[in-house]
Image 1 (cartoon, helix red, strand yellow):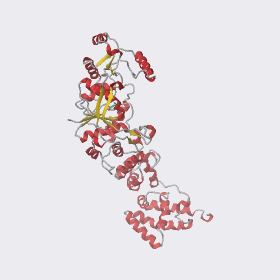
Image 2 (image 1 turned 90 degrees about the horizontal axis):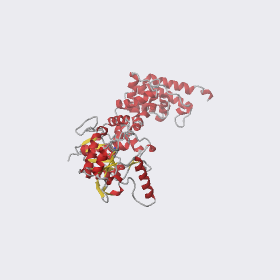
Image 3 (image 1 turned 120 degrees about the horizontal axis):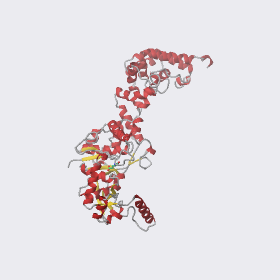
Image 4 (image 1 turned 180 degrees about the vertical axis):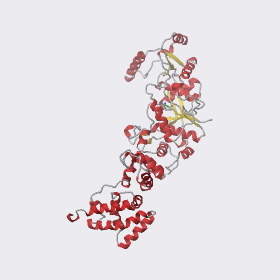
Length: 502
Ligand code: GLU
C-alpha cells in the first residue's frame, strides 16, 4: 500500500504547538514509510477564515524547515488542495449519497430545528427521553416528493441517514478497538448546508478518500467525529483509512495546552528566540518515545526512527523548561557567524553599537562575532547575549568601589592589586589564546606572591564593570591593550579619588 497522510488545518488561527505536532508526526510517518505527506487547507468555515492565518501557516513551516510533498503551493496529482476550490465536488458526492438512499433532503427551517433541539434537550435533562438534536423529521419524506420540492426551488440541506439501532466499530492504531452506539452520534448531521457549502465532515471524508489518504493521524479531540466519518465511508461504499488519534498535549496542570500556560503559537516561541531545531526536536518527543536515554534528534534521525508503535497513550505534558534546555543545546552548537547573525537584531535594538537601531560598523561586527565564544555557554536565548557584551562596545559604568575588592581585601590593597593587574594587562591583551594568557598570569602571580583570584578580581571589574562577567582573558584580547589600559587607569583614578577621606 502506498502510504499517504496529511495535515489538514483550518486556517482560523495561528499555528500552535498542537497543530505543528500533528503535522510533524504525519511528516515523519510518511518519511519513515517512503510515503507522501500532504497539506490540505480546510477552509470551509468562511466566517472564521482569514488569509493572514494561511500566510502564518506557510511562514511557520518554512521557518521550521519541513515541507509537504503535495499541497496548495506545491501542487500534486490530487489537487486542488484548498477545500473552497472543491465545493462542486462536495455537492456531487452529497448527491451520490442521496441517490444511494444514504442521505436525505431536509426542508426544516432554522427556527424549527432550534425549537426541536431545545425541546429535546429539556426532555433529556428531565430524563423523559435520551434523544437530543434533530428529530429526523424529513427522513421519512418519500424520495420522489423530496426531489420534486428541491426541483421547485425549496430551500434545503442534505443530511446523512445514520443507520438506527446499530453500533459503529473502528480500530485506532493507538487506542485499540472502539465501538460507538449510533444513537450517541449526532443525529443525522447536515452534510451540505442550505447555501450549498459542505460541512467539515463531508469535505474531510470526501477529500481523504479522493486524495487516497491511507492514514489519518490527528489530534484526539477529533475522536468523537470518527464514528460519523466511518459511517460516511460505509455509506459511500469506501474503505476507511487507518486511524490514529494522537496523545493530547497538556500543560503542567493537566489541562489542554493553551495560552494560559504560556506561549502556544509558534510565532510567540520564535519571537522569544527559540530555534526551529529546538522546537522540532522537542515537539517530536511530545507523545512519542524513541530511544532510552537519547534526547537529541535531527529531523532525519526522527524520520528514520518514527513508527506508530513509538507513540504513547498517556497525554504528553508540555515542559517549557525542557524546551529551553533544547534551545540552549542548539545555540551552543551554532558557529560564531550563525550565532552572531541570530543575536545581531537584538544587539541593534538594544543600542549596543550606538543609538538603538544602529547597525554595527565593520570593526564592531568583527568584535561581535569574535565575542560569541565568550557567551555561548551562558545563554539560553539569543536575546540574552547583547547585554552581556555591552562592555565590549562602550566603557561600562563604574560600580561601587567595594565591587572591586577581592575577598578580605580593603581599598588600598585593591588599588595595589589593580596596579599589578595593569602591569599584566598588555601581555594578556596580546596573548594569542587563553592558555598562554593563563600561563603568563600564573607565573606573574607566583613571582609576586599574589593569589591569582585576588590579582584578577579588580582587573575584571575594571575591564567589564562587573564581578560576574564573560571570561576576562578573551575580553582583554577583544578590547586590545589600548582600551584595556584606559579602563584600568580610569578605575585607578576612581578608586584613588577621595582616598584620604575614605
Ligand atoms: N480541519 C481539521 C482541523 O482543523 C482537521 C481534522 C482532521 O485532521 O481530520 O484540525
